Structure formats: C-alpha cells, structure tokens
Image 1 (cartoon, rainbow, N blue to C red):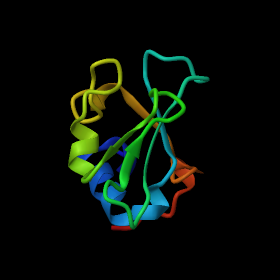
Image 2: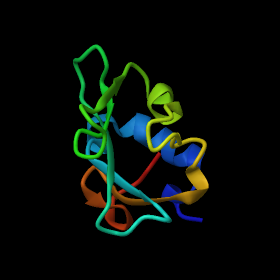
Image 3: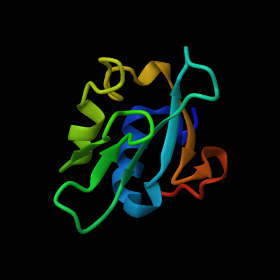
Image 4: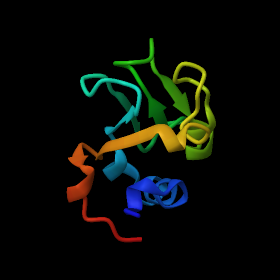
Length: 103
C-alpha cells in the first residue's frame, strides 16, 4: 500500500507537511477525472484548513485538520467516512507519486 492510500498515514502527512499540502487534489472513484476536489492549509489564519472554492460554493474553512476531514461537505460525505472511495491525485499541487514523502 502506498502512503497516500492509507487514511491514517495520509492524514498524518497532511498535518505534518502543512503549507506543502496546500492545493491537495482528489476525486471520488465514481467521478470523472475532469472533476476535482481541493483541500489545503494556509498558515496564520484563524481557520487554516480549507476545502473547496472551486467545487464547494464559497468554500469552507476549519480550525483543525480533523474538522476538515470529518466535515460532510462532499455531497453529504466526509473525507474520513468516504476514504475507501477517494483517489488522491496531487499532494500540494504535486502528482502524489512524485511527492517526496517522509514522516
């Protein structure tokens, strides 16, 4: 299993890498490849974890990564609950296979 296929490892990397995880792109496996969902992290704000803007009207912001990953904002699904149907495409705007992952 690759690091970005395991929920706990991916979550830990998302938190650890902070701004490097900004512009992370994923799909649900029942969506076409031209569809996309984006999440990220912007420091020095009250709610640094964000989702959307291009796919969620007005976007969403959260204080913690746990809040972001548990929010049921993707057609009533959360990242955590729907993990088995998520395909990570990019981590921090870098193709996930090319990201220099180390925890």
